[in-house]
Image (tube, rainbow, N blue to C red):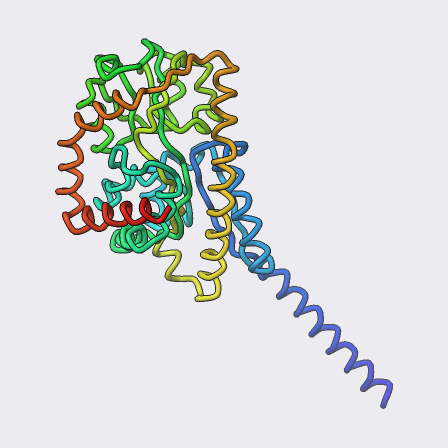
Length: 338
């Protein structure tokens, strides 16, 4: 009798253990699709890997990032819409392409707003940056952190741009953003809005003469293969922003949200350091690959600033005078604290 009872007990124990194992096998990690526009070897790709590693480590493997680069999930605009609709969980992309969704994002497109990256960090990571980011939630997006794309510079195949008049008639690809379109039209270029994913082909086929991006992007995207002239203009400091679908975010626990936020901050710190370390090297590499590098003189940069006065007034009217004044005050404070 005792033997029979032991046999039954053992069978129950084995059955319970088996059920536990089966249940554990059924528990799959939360898979999060994270889209980005550049390729895996770019600064964007490297920072995305840091983010993915941090999420998996902090969650004990319960959350995993599926990183999908090279615009395989679509352009920034397409991915933003996918996040709003809940069809995609996360992405990183340009703040400039968000202006059609949240008008306050246009503040970061202000030409010659920042003199250096340290000023940008102080403003983006401070109250003004958070205020602008919080506006996204009304539109179905949650902003976590700003990454750095960098100061944007001009390339083209038509002529060396050393003065304002050299911009005349250059067919220039710009982001799908009214501030960029208006700015370059004002400077005399023929501004052509195109998704980044279509840019290399447009340059290769001479559909457009030129484009403007930070050194790192020009190098990692191999624009040197289809562009001859590069002018160091530093005309706009361009941030990227890490976004989450609000529909998805609201379904996460507080602990899961914290995992994503903490990992995003670590990736931000890595990405900025990595991007800045790469920028000087990228410029030297571009010169080595045959691009003709021109430096826009301070006097010509000032001429461009003055020409863009109406664009700045338009930005201020669009984002609201309070935000414009707060941003200018934050920049002045960052400048004074050096």
